[in-house]
Image 1 (cartoon, rainbow, N blue to C red):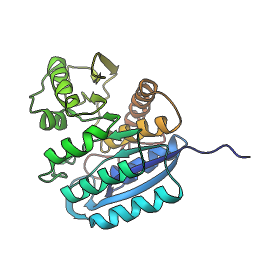
Image 2 (cartoon, rainbow, N blue to C red):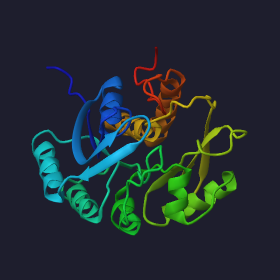
Image 3 (cartoon, rainbow, N blue to C red):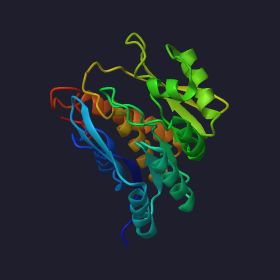
Image 4 (tube, rainbow, N blue to C red):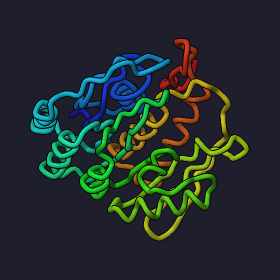
Length: 264
């Protein structure tokens, strides 16, 4: 009998340019050897320069997608990306509970690389309904500032923000430090409610970082689906994203995408 392939579910928006969102998640799942499932929440008209339009899917249809994949195939871990309005947030929270998804990675997508708002007037509901269901939440610094109301300029501020975000109910928090000043190394700060751990990697100078957050959270989801512990999943995901950035692609006129194959 063939070995059962791990199943990873992404609940997120579509990036028509292929660099972030559902597309980045599925590329990551494939690269890491897990079977990818998807629930689309929104469709964007997007390229490397901008997000020119957003169309949210009806929450009923988001729920139907969720039911379709979970009632038949199921998943070993899931990640949440773009949840752009309150009705979608409420629907997704209900489905997480219905299907008992415990290995849940939450990437609190709020703005695009170009600054377009992707979470509209729903931050408080995200904190109330989604964060308490998360095994780990993985905000970058701008997202952590919004969630925590803490201005972040150094590691000490990251710790304060992580503690605040953890207080909303997430089991663990990883504040990603890529937006720190360039004289800082690429430090991500992990907090489990008791202790902090710094995950450090080299800082690679490139403008082609579109989809980094999506790729990282999808990688964590994939490794969790394969049965790895959270600390090992984070370590492996950090290494995977570093190589994807190192070999990022000169595609388009703006911020190019990562290379999910990890090589040119």
